[in-house]
Length: 178
Length: 214
Image 1 (cartoon, each protein chain N blue to C red):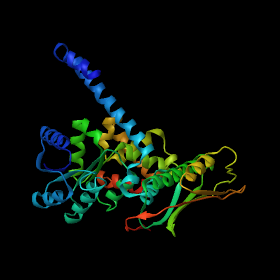
Image 2: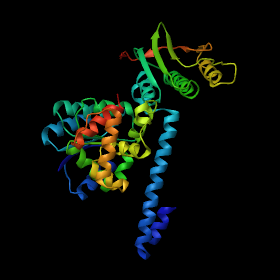
Image 3: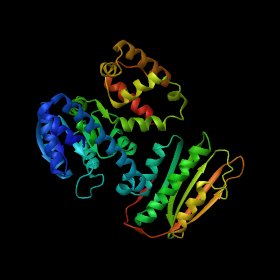
Image 4: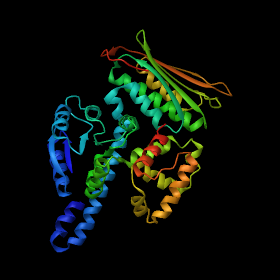
């Protein structure tokens, strides 16, 4: 729309056309940034590029909390499993930042004997309850679609430990570890 | 100033070449993959290489790896990496060497030709050009830290611009304050973050980035 207006103004009023051009530039930058956010919400670039472990590390870097990541996954699970595990960890970490107040978090991701396991632990005040409508039951349901399980331990006073496991196979023998 | 470009999309490669020409750069080579980038860097010895993160054959982070490989072959080769999205993880890999001559910008920034040309010159001169989005993420992940949270809003603004790689005079211009005021803010920021003061713009920027990325 703006581009049409620019075309019309180009001869008659170059100054107006220039202002419109600036506006068009700005709205294209805005549209790109919205698109990027959308893509991040569906398939984060680092997850697609490098897989679960690197994507979890990227999550940890972007979190306002101090997050320690240990991981060993010798290959990549199928895309739907990888992305379910990623979003589960992402949501758990967001929960910690939202509810646990200032604290540290530890993420451990590993694969053994046909099982992908991820754990998110924090030293916050505890008291997280999957039965009381927190995001935990949603995560549990989504993992169930892959025969995955979620276990929560969060006594008052903390620490909160959330573990998940998803049975799956890995492809590609490349090793991501640390 | 001589530039080598690695970008797989013809239109973008051509657009970048024209833009750089218009701003007085000489484009020594424009290639479409990582192997050719390495060859061009070795043959043409450019002042700076501009590299798209996504290159064939994998179309993942091939360009980033090619840029890092080029810097191993030609130490301190200034590299400006362009991407459709920015990631702290990748920024850290680029900056891991601890030396300057590194840029990491969203492709959208190319839309502002003059500012983009300025960023290319800064990187070529051994400085840095970090995308404001990367800097914002660095600041968020440091928000739990008392030292950054203790800065005044103005000091945070100065800190962000400094982390983007801007000099004192550029910061003064952008915030419409005097250079002396900027110098006062930077001195106070360095004091509060416990960083050793330095008059050298590039070294100061690296200290700030290292602090935020620790």
